[in-house]
Amino acid sequence: MNLILMRYSWVQLLKRFMATPPAFSMAGVKMGLFTNNISPGPDTVLADLTEPTYASYAQAAATLPAGAFSDEDGKVFIDYGDLTWSLTTGDTPVTIIGAFIVDGTGQLLMAGKLDNPVTLTNPGDATLIGAQVVVDPVQLYGQFESEP
Image (cartoon, rainbow, N blue to C red; front, side):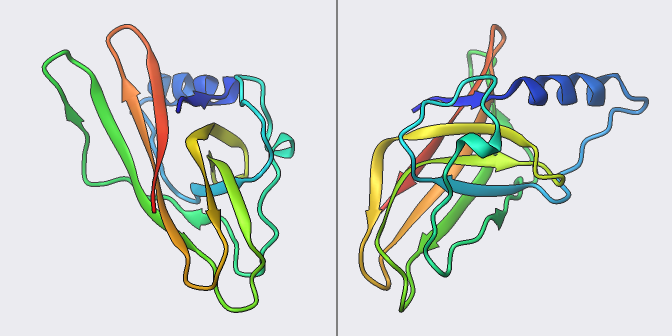
């Protein structure tokens, strides 16, 4: 599954790179889920995504690890880390189509569909979803992955 960076993200990245000194902050960055069958594009906004309505759902704080790593091709990988999403007693079943990241103001930064939707049916059902941004010498892309 491809993670799509919104046009807003590119503008914010450029502004932060141009700042003296470069300014980067993860303050208030959150991951959320969506349940509608949409293929996010660069102009997608948060209102285009339908978040789950089960009682215990809420966007969760996304954090970066201590650093990034690179491979032999020069690609740099930045992991947002896995978050556990689960149902608790009283929650209604949900099918998760994809995930997204918002900044501290609630502005959509990136979104993507999972390779395979994940259905949570019973209390205790859970999945891990993590985002990874890849900075390639040629392009910038990323992905969301889930684990049952």
